Image 1: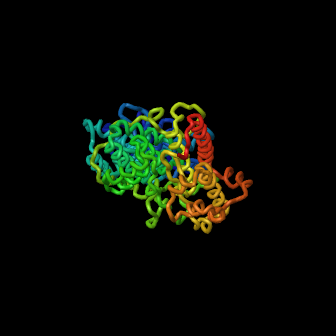
Image 2: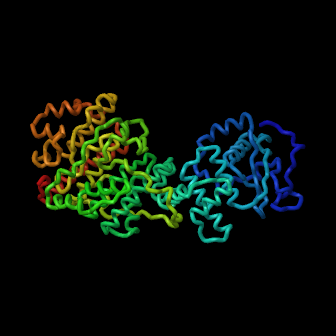
Length: 541
């Protein structure tokens, strides 16, 4: 550590300077302080490990600190506390002193600043972390809400509005829009209790905005269809969010699950819910009478072919996840301006007037129940498991698993729910032919073999022809192949590998989550048939 002339720097007294103490100027004072007399700030905004920790430690070990620690002292205390950033450097200095015993790491150069308010110290740490970068959105959000609570206590008021908080923070040198403050409150109070892993793994403001927009749109449908109050929807949303919590957060999985839940509760065609949700996300409302006519056909057992989603022309490989890759969770990459909105598409999931909100931050988080009503569990099921012995729930589960698998592998638009018959879903077409030119052999092989697995689970080539044909559009290559019994057309349209390649082309390449979903889908397929046999039900009638 670089040596500085100690006789030019005031040594600390037995007790540290106190705010307003006689003889102590209300300015920054240089000091040499024993490292054992400095504590980390207990409200440090950074709650996770600093990713630069090892690099900073190596630099301090070799060259010392390039900047002094800034410290202060709370009234009535004798030890110092880090005032503005520096918690990582303090911890490193303490470790280096323990490891080496070097006096250079024992007495360090500091700048003392008189104590003012607790909120000033917290905001100083926030500003310093912003300058250095690397602070996650959820860490910043929690710190801002901590500052809000401190300001309320110091000002002696019950609650600060977002507008007032925005003004005070700006006056204190930390500018945030009230819309961003609103997003932070939603992340901390609503999302953190149910998706902590996703948030702590780096889920940022854009994803939080999309989740909140989806929340608003789905909640509007839930209430307009009289499915329950806000508390009921909160419980459903919490359960569904918690189901998919993890480092590789996928908004499409949450949306698909919400659509399934609402369709089940409302007992309507899931296509109806999907169209209505798309409209609400785009800022429009729609006439229920236009959609409910579609449900009549489903209720009477006649599938309306208009409910089949139009296949999307794949213009890229966004969403495809192969072994060893980290999934890109940015929903902006899922579709471009030429891509039509189809089932579960994230187009249109954008914050609706989030910057213009004026409501105050919510006070309490929602709590996830152990199991939501009619929700589809993600773990493997066993024969006779309570709640999963009826065909309706099992078919919904099969569709959810198939849709998740397809979406994570770039062919989500090909999986369509099938109400009241079969396995609960069908494939509406073959993968787009352009994929053969866009993908390498391993990825194309994985997608092709996955398509065949999904086709097998949906019984596309063994189900009664009339039952399958009625669900496919006239321009579907899959329909043409089935209707004309043209196996060559099907094999030429979907890369058909030697079945012996299944192990290394598919099983080995699938991510752990995809592998579990595939096993669960096959397990669900077997369970559907066993339930049908026990109840003497014809699946395709």
